[in-house]
Length: 171
Image (cartoon, rainbow, N blue to C red; front, side):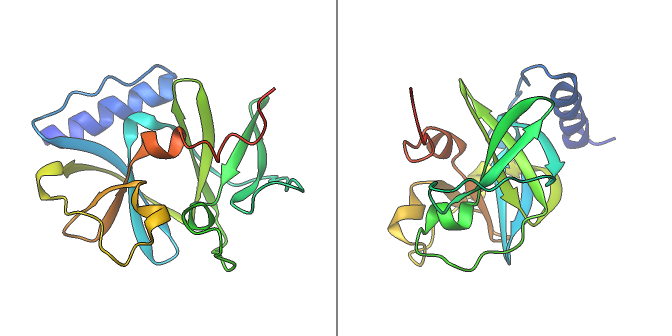
């Protein structure tokens, strides 16, 4: 078994056990979860992903921003599901039918992002990331860490998880 495969298996075991994964960086690399959203390939640092599930019993909530796809109950906990296409561009009307979700967490913030398909995990060499292309609108560029040579868009999980637009109502 290759070193990268062992690292991926170790992180998966940590995620399954419910513990906080301990990332061991081998230089400038990161283990990511790769997924499809429409025709685009995206990736997010696996240390922020707590689980991957199929969409089931999604409840739409009126009077929420259009990027909130709805709410799901996961083991008794209510989780908001965010449509990233609409989050990046609020004017986007058409969106793909998202069949999977990635539950992501940072500090106290936790929600899910929709995906059309989960491609799996992979070790990403950060030395080969390029800056986001100029075609990405300004509202979405701040959420992107870079683009791989394979044209996978690496999301900046902290920027997404700490965005004030995600917090719908604080009491």
